[in-house]
Every structure is written in C-alpha cells, then in structure tokens.
Image 1: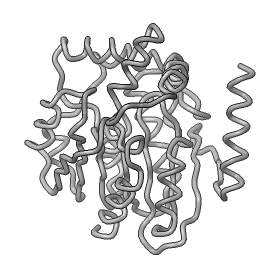
Image 2 (image 1 turned 135 degrees about the vertical axis):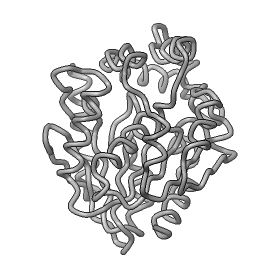
Image 3 (image 1 turned 45 degrees about the vertical axis):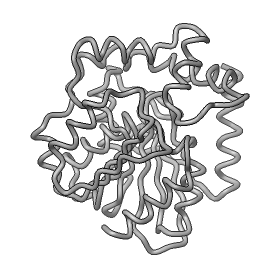
Image 4 (image 1 turned 90 degrees about the vertical axis):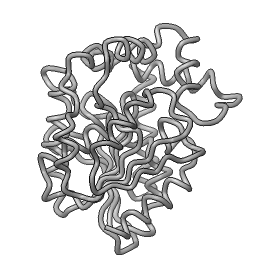
Length: 275
C-alpha cells in the first residue's frame, strides 16, 4: 500500500509539473491538458491493467496539434473507483457516464484493447460527443469458449514467468533488459482487476449490428505482431465496419503506444485532421 501511494504521488507531481490537470467526474478520474493546436480534442482510453498516466508520451506528442487531450482511468484502475458490481458491463457503463460528462465537445476517441471496446460502446451511447474512432486492437469480438480460456490464462499471470510471457506477447519487439522489472509491475497492476478477467466469458460482447451501426469515421489499427487476440477478431471488424480504414501495419503489437509512439501519434494526428 505504501509503495502504491508513493507511486501515485510521484505520478501526480510529474503530471502537474507538465501542465496536466487531474479531476474526478462521476467517480471517474480524468487526466487532461490544454493543447497548442486547433485540431479537435482527443480522448485516450487505455486497456486492462493500464491507466491514464501511461499515455503521457503519446499525450505530449499530441498536444502541439490538438485543442485538448483527455485520458480517463478506467473504473477500478489508477485513481478511478471500481463500481459496486465490478464487472465489464458495469465498469464500461461507468466510463461512458463519466466521459460523457467530462467532454463538452465532440472528440476523436482513441481506444486500445478494452479501451477500444469502451470507445465503441461510448460512440453508440453518446454519438453527440464523437467525431471519429481510432481503434487499436479493440477487444469485444465474438470468441469461442476455447478462445476465452486461452485469453484468461494469459491475463491471469499467476507466476513471474507467465507475466514475462504476457509482456512478450503484447509488444512487437524484444522487451530488452528491463523485461523482468516491467513484467513484475504488470503483474502487480493486473491483480486488482482480476474480477474483470474472470467476468469476460459472460460479459456482453460486441455484435455485428453494433459495429455496422457506427455512424462516425473509424481507423482500425491492427499490428502485424498482434499475438494476444486471434486473427479472426480482425476478420470480424473487417466484415462489419463500414466507414473505416483498416491499417494492418508492421511494427506494432497489441498496444501500439508501447511499440512506436511517434508513428502512432502521426497516424492519430492525421486521422484527427481528416475528421
């Protein structure tokens, strides 16, 4: 508990020094900062076990181009409270409510993994607050029981060795000399959100109709080194997205912001300029 408190204090101090504001909206913790450009606000939605502050390198690259950057902590992550029923549906609903109140204009929504699933749900619930969706390996496509079993086994990280394997699964390149330290930190991050991992097989996933009904431009980035989600999930989105660019790109794994933040920022700025 002391280590976590010290870590949070250091993160808050660092963000404040760089001009970021932290606030709570409907029990949702939001990190935001003014930009120096004239492009629309960009919202960044992280995946399972991550948090808003992890987007700092990407936010810094976006600020020269956009009016504002906004990154919420998903419920039960970072400094956001978990809902009373800590499952995928309740947590996503809480995110949708809080983000809707945090935004005062339509924004471009970037969502990675669980954040991509949440971005799609937000676009369906609050289309008045969405200019476009930039989805990076979004979760939520239909899966078989065997798919879910493999996915859950990977996310549970019951040992340090399985945490190292998880890290090697989600990044494009060799994690390098710090793999054990990063794997230790990731395993610690995932432990409090185990209820979401356990709930995934019974949580309502995305439907073909839900994807087809998206009424905003979509950029789908799916790395050639994606090894966490099966290829048939990409096929699902290819089949049902309408106004979409499918970017099946080299140099990215499951979390593009961990692989090449400069290349990701360029893509995101270009997409924001187009919409």
